[in-house]
Length: 283
Picture 1: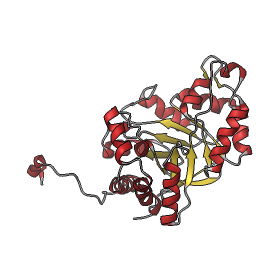
Picture 2: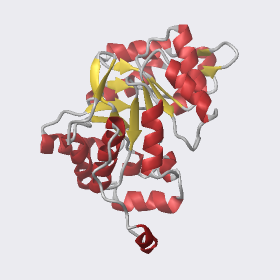
Picture 3: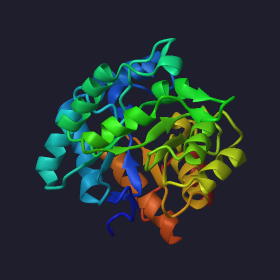
Picture 4: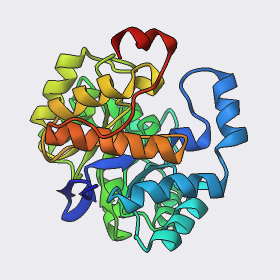
């Protein structure tokens, strides 16, 4: 298997596939029972490291998520030790926001504590989480408020700033205002899951973004099968954009890697299909 294709974001080479971490930590976007299953069976340093190892060995060396959440940081270190690959970490920390923040600005002392922690954990990119970014989107003034000093702090701590958002407006407004960010995180899937605009409108926002976009939830948190979900996203984003996907086992990681490469290379995937009795009539 060839190493996975790469792109450049803020001068840094990153894999076009990014390892998502919701399925490691217990955020299924499905049911509490599924969340509990993940926490009880997957959210353990060794199991996460085994999955990351598959990604790292296939050139998918970029990991996105709440890096300070245990046991993720420890699992990344273990996978790095197993493979000799240095992970590129896209950290998405939440920053302290209160009702006065849009008008008065962030408590930069508290923000710096969070930012410094991401630097200490080895993050290359620091992208305030959607819970922070979208609270600051001003549709009337068409800006993402109070983010300039946050981006400066991220730069001062030797990381690359970006924004994680569920609102397409955040991308449009950050671009038009010249906010100092190098990339965006945006939900994008053919199901429209958790998306605030129709799929075609979100596609246009991504296609017209001035910076590369890291798309997330390509399988709509399990609502789409991998073949359908990945075929759609890889064929409707630009060469500079990325797809973030999480898995719960090493075999799943290998499947989505090979499936994605086959889609990008326009060839048949060299993976087996799942078997049920109903397939007998077409074999």
